[in-house]
Length: 327
Image 1 (tube, rainbow, N blue to C red):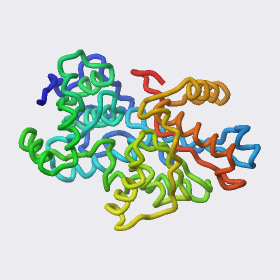
Image 2 (image 1 turned 90 degrees about the vertical axis):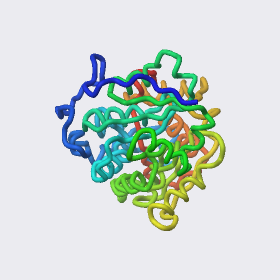
Image 3 (image 1 turned 30 degrees about the vertical axis):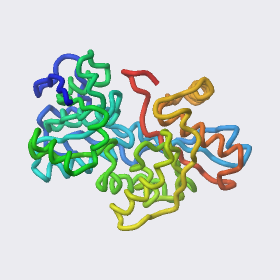
Image 4 (image 1 turned 60 degrees about the vertical axis):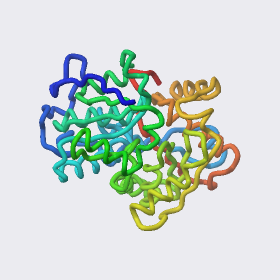
């Protein structure tokens, strides 16, 4: 069963995300309409005792500062897809996510700024009968049409037959996969690695779908990915993304497993204390779903000697704390 939530008219109502780029709705149909990104993103060194004891340096790659609405790795992954959608002439962009998906939010915001209609296929048809949570309400305020599907249907999101059914329903839409990870996104993330080349000996990123790691490792120094989900599936996903984008695996990368704290968006008092302490000492807000787990994992790897002696380690800050749902 699928259920659709009412969609907002193209102009966002009161309460929609402000447009700090100065680009009006209906601007140029391409990434340029999103305003100028801050690239390369800043690289900030912080002094951490666990690193200094091993002669290591910790650098924060501040991708969270790239763009006020489409920040972090969302910019690097979405921008090439938005360009491809514009060039294809597709009348709308369709993508997938859960009830609190940052990817859906970023896509909705980008679509509003570009005047490109967006459709979000949301996991969980039971949500259609409930008030929208703040994240989904934000999507709808930015003009995204929400289409709720069962979990069984959602698992078919990569099947061509089901994608064809969605195109029958919504028209010749441009489809972006869950999390934005596809060939275009992987190629977009190559620049992240290139920005770190010569400045860091190791690049590290928290991973959901693996697209950022796949691209970063291809363009930059040896890379470490920290999965934030359980399941042990990510290595195959990253290899598959690299094979699709480059024809073969590329770059030197590995996964640091065991730091998911129970799964996606799960936490523990130990992780909360660590993130709170990091924020207080360095004045950097720590997003909890991805970034806190990355920094915790790197600290553990530094303490156990699992990072190269004397290395400069760049931790990619893939996003800021969510003002709607908390850290």
